[in-house]
Amino acid sequence: MADVNTGTNWTCYDSSTMTAREIYGRTLAELAKTDDRIVAVTADLEKSTALNKFGAVHPDKLYNVGIAEQNMMGVAAGMAKTGLIPFASCFAIMAVLRGGEQIRTDICYQNLPVKIIATHSGISFGHAGTTHHCTEDFAIMRSFANMTVICPADGIETSKAVRACVNYPGPVYMRIGRGFEPPVYENEDYDFEIGKATIMRDGTDLTIITCGIGVLQSVNAAKTLAERDNVNVQVINMHTIKPIDREAIIAAAKKTGKILTIEEHNIEGGLGDAVASVLAEEKIAIDFKKHGMKDEYSMIGYAEDLYAHYKFDANGICDLVRDMLGIAYEEDEDWEDE
Image (cartoon, one colour):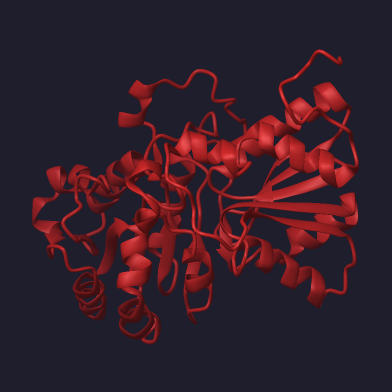
């Protein structure tokens, strides 16, 4: 297991250096120094996706196609046909829904090594509104043949995932947040492999399988549950949604007999359904619950408020675990009866 950062030393100043998109831009710039195949394409969002970090070092390798996400995917496909490894970046909602046809037909159909790094995913763009939230991308990208789908937990894991996907065959879709998510890992001293989950915390009473922002929140929830409820929760970081780590799911089911999935995504077609499919195919009958957006469009507000409202934060996850285990808890802030 890797060393986990509790997030307590995180400040707003760290968002300019430690978040997933910032580390993505710097990592790609570093890789391109020794790999001439790497180029980057964006749809007028080089600053928002941190590709300006790449462009500052490799101005001749960064291509801005303007506000034309569909064209961006086509250009990336053409580059890949010449032997290059293009990294295409824009907001997740625009990459997946506006450029979806081109991803499917130009990139996936030809099984080209285009790496789509989509930022501002899930509900991380909170106050920008529901039109800018993307809670459908797992479902859509999972359904495209040849596509690999990754959701790193933080900036450190994003760096590892970017490095791993350069020579990984075929197209890759990686979703990261807006850029205010605290780090999960203390350092890079842990093994990362596409398609292999990471156990963040051992436990025997219940397993949480999650990804992205859910990883740190689930680890913190597990610590709280151990201290206050004497509950031992296992937390698995399923950073690769496709191909899913079947062995990790099967082992968790046999070990704890209860699985809760947490995802910043619609519960239809996402991580929860991917885990459920493995359990069904293996004929494993356990207590199982999917948690995410309940087939609805998100509210508008600051991301941290939305995370709390939809129970994506540690407090909400504690409540979900207690519900599954039948543990009574105080649902309101009235403590006069305690």
